[in-house]
Image (cartoon, rainbow, N blue to C red):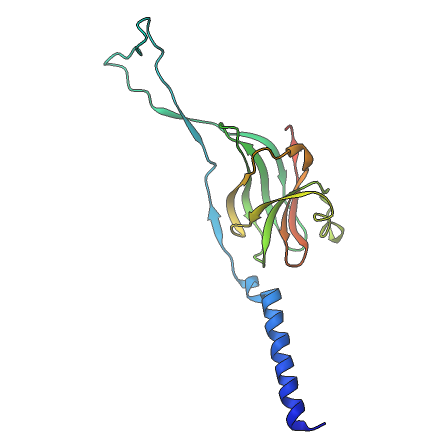
Length: 190
């Protein structure tokens, strides 16, 4: 075959393979990191003084005015992250807020950055080692959204009406390559 035709074709194919590889694997993410630190949301409740017989609140001028006081959230389920495809540490907690809403909280998270990382509640068992890397999309899962950062403390809203008894674990899931970066078995009482 003519060399003038082969060289440009091979060059074009090489650039295409490199471009697709860069898009899929995003190797620069091995060197990037981001941190998000969110507080646990709280709901404030206004404490109103008890009414008197006249129906009006009894407030003496010497009494301080009623101030909103935060209502403490309640931990329902918790678990420690174990490493799968990438070294991962931290704690996963499902927390019920005073208004009845629920969040998944990742505390002290430290994992690798990667393409298309998601936070999932799943019904899959957490298995250590390579055998546990690919089990989380085999059954039921609830996608709580994109991982906000690979380090820090994050909150993820759980949709109202979600049946938490149907899920037993949390996975930081790489949707691009269908692999778990890390996972936690959830324990406690729903």
